[in-house]
Length: 109
Image (cartoon, rainbow, N blue to C red; front, top):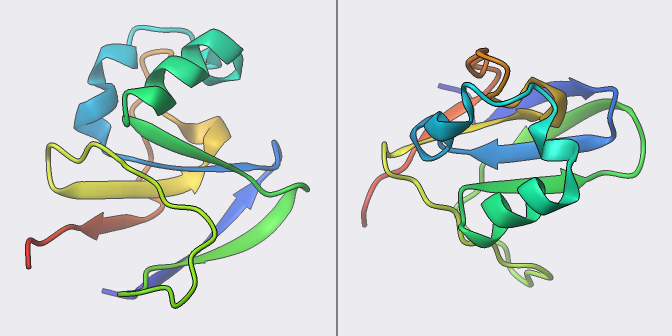
């Protein structure tokens, strides 16, 4: 499995999450994440990380083992052991499940 994916966004936002952590959003509206209160709730619970990239376009996301001088640290709830990464406009909601644009399995150790 490749450790990088390319993602196209037209909302200038990428996201990383575990589908199991957001399964309660399946019946919600497809744009629930654009409502500040809903977005903040899920981020604070560690269910998703939204990354504002500043502009629409094609981005490369790469999994790495370590970042030498991190500027930001994230805590993400990963109950299934698998992270999904991609454009925020494709996040789970409106009865749609996430497309598997990127998937990483998380291992202990």
